Length: 305
Image 1 (tube, helix red, strand yellow):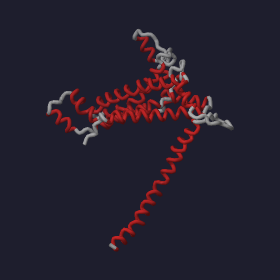
Image 2 (image 1 turned 90 degrees about the vertical axis):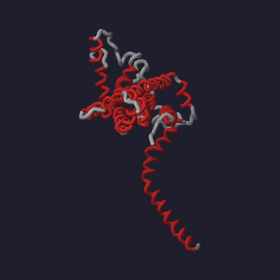
Image 3 (image 1 turned 135 degrees about the vertical axis):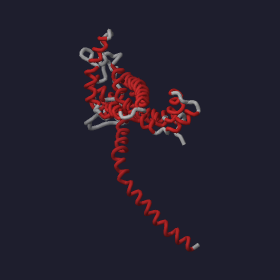
């Protein structure tokens, strides 16, 4: 017994030293995370409870007044509705097109690399520069797209100045940008599916293209589908650059989205308190939306094993 007590007494200091060295190793990462993530979030939450205006000497606490105004002012409700409509159009279209293109490209040989690079280029490009190109393509008088419509006998459409068409034109650019990202992830998921599963399904009679896709490919792509949907949703919620460059929220606020409203409040009107409340709501909304997607999709996702 005395020997065992001596042994435990000798191992405790070593475990303590090992634990202390572990904390020392992660201390720089924790300090960096606090400086870059925690402290800015605390500052945003603090200013969201005040009426602080940039460069003002004094400010006062207003409680949750900034949050209440975000739900009662008509302009903010329009921005929230436009954001949800944009996400509702962009995410399903980008995910479906990405999956379709991945299925078409997956079985190709040497040309697969070319398609991967071609469709992934919009992801790597600067969206501000790309927006200028889209401004020319969608121009009401000199745009090539309107020239094609006129050649086919249709009326010209002012894509970026018509209140009924502007948000959908911005959404089309978002789909163009996200489709390549979704396609590359779906290609990785398709490559990971073992070939012997298809061979076994063929023996059991599921040798048709639709049967193979519906019974094997789609269930095994569940985790990839979940990841693609969540990342595309978060990216779509963050739409800002195309709106700022092409329409500036117009015409008639038809393209004013939530992040552009935050930009106007914070950097045009210098209302830091209101802008902080809006960005807090924006972050909470993305968090809840992502958790809801995970909660719903997890029950229908097959992870194998």
